[in-house]
Image (tube, rainbow, N blue to C red; front, side, top):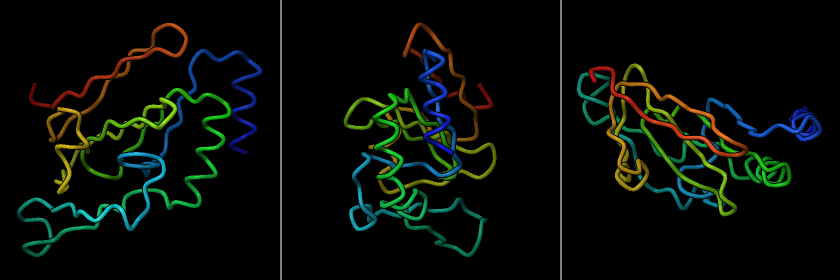
Length: 148
C-alpha cells in the first residue's frame, strides 16, 4: 500500500511528498542500528519512579522495516517524514537529503542523553510545530513552545 501511495503522488506530479508516522524512522541517520543508539531518555520528575528512563532505540522503527521504507522514500523522492513518539525534538536528514523531523509532545517531555545533538538548536518543551510549504520540494518548519 505504501508504494502505491508514493506512485500515486509521483503520477499526479506532487510537488512535495510528506510521510507522517507515530514512530520516527531514525534519530540521526537512516542506517543507525539499535546497537549504535546507546543513550537513554529520562522522564521528568514525578513521572514514574525516580530515575525512570527509556532506551532511545525503543523509539524508532526497527532497522529491517526502516530499510525497506527508505528504499521507497529515496526512489519516490519523499520530501520529509514527520513523527512524534520520542517526546522531544529531532531534526535530521537522510544521506540523500530527506528530512526526518520529530516533534516533541504536548504533554510530558523526555530528555535524551543526546538531546543537544538531535535537536538542531530547538528548545525541548511542551509545544507544537508549524510547517510552511513553498515551491516544489521546499518547505520550512518552526517549533514553538506553548508559552511563547
